[in-house]
Length: 296
Image (cartoon, rainbow, N blue to C red; front, side, top):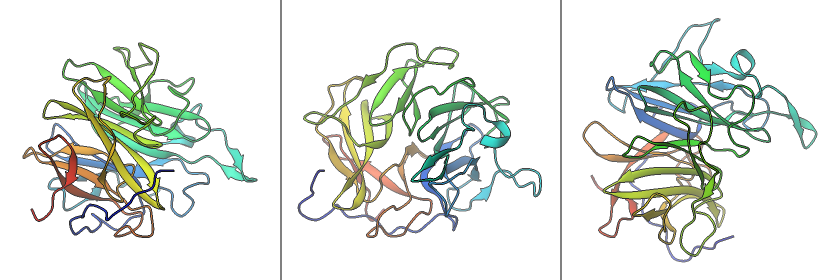
């Protein structure tokens, strides 16, 4: 395990966006000018049997409301037991029932919303909104089997319109045009001098002409966001560096004004808070590194 020496980079003052237990926060901006947020739900049994994908919305990144509120009928955009196929089997972990739904991530591309998600021990999948709206209904792009056998899936669309499935600890594969599977064998994206940018929670985005690869890693008991950057999609990537302390498994997005943000949720004792959705502004150093923006 890596060991950090010296002090951590500073964080700006942080507080949750709203008071609801959530991990692996994901936010995207829709074509309607509304921001959409999702993440792992199911507290307190995160590692037991869950199955919901919930989405919240906001016009200003400050006030958030649930996207769907239909008591006794529907409060989720997708549910394993209602909508799933290969995701349904319940296994055992340490002798207890085990089938959590982890790390749903919402994005808008190719004219509609997409949600990638994972089921530990089974794999990860991809959902497409059949209506072009964030509330769905969502259909599976691979109903017969998982798209990949690892957790923590994400999508990345390059400037040429090609879409890539990013998952696990930095694996990547270009998607078929119809988004039903991979058009090429997966590759491993790795920083210089390291096998991975993080052991989970990989995310890829492009800013200022560079590809930025982020991932989550536990170091000294803390759950951090590490990153590396490259001039080309497949690298070579720079050495990895600690980008945002306590921000392991996050996503990064641009707001309506062109500002970049990183999501946050808190997963260790020294984080500002635990298991609540949050976000913070970031900036890029002249060398191309990500860092929290302090005092904006």
